[in-house]
Image 1 (tube, rainbow, N blue to C red):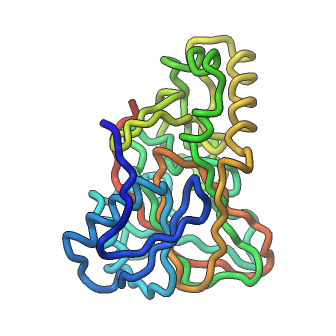
Image 2: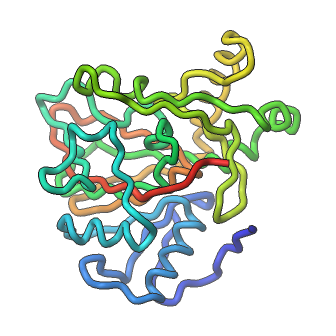
Length: 277
C-alpha cells in the first residue's frame, strides 16, 4: 500500500519542522472529544510527518489514554512496570531531576523494539520542562534507508536481528524480573505507508542473526552511526504542557540530558503495534 501525502487538512493546521519530518499541530483541543474528521486528519498527519507535536494541551490521564485509543489499543510494556503510574498501568512516568543517576532514552532507539509486537507509537506529555535544554531529537529511518547504497540495501534485505530489553533495562529493573527478547527484520516495511525503514537501534539490538558476530558488530556499528546523520533529523524544543507523538516504526529518537540538575517530568502512553515485517 502506498500512502499519498495529503495536500491539505480540513480540521487542523500542520507546520513542518523540516521538509522531511515533524509537524506542529494547531487548531485542536485534545481535552475535548474529537470528531471523526479530526481523527482522520491526525492519522494522515501522523503518517505524513512521522512525528507530530502539540502545544498548550493540559492533559490528565484520561485525556492522554483517549488520544492513544484514537490510534489503537494501549501497549503496556512489561519492562516499564516499575515506572507505571499508581492505578494507571497504561501510563509510564517519565521524570528526571537533581537526584537522577540516568534518564530514559539517551541512546538512539525505537521504543520497546525488544517486545514481540513493539508499540506502533508513543505519546509523551511533559508538564514540567527545563529552560533551556531537554530537547528530543528524531531521525527518519525512511531517509536513513533511502540513503543506503543499493548494494547495502540488498545485503541487509532478509536479515534479522535480536532486540533484548536487558540492553536498555537490565541494570535498572528489579532483580529477577523477566525481560522480553525478540527477533525482527533489519529492514522493515511500514504497514501504512509501504515504505522501507532501518529497524536496528543502539538502545535494544544485540546482534544480527546468522552471520559471524564480528561481521554483525561491524554492520550494526555502521548503521548506528548512519542513522544519526543530521540531515535525517528534526529537533523538538519542549515547553510546559507540550506533546510529542512519534511513530516507532519509522523513527528513532534520543532524549538529550543536558539540563542537570533541572527537572523534566511528564507521562507517556504507548499504542499497540504488530510484529514487524
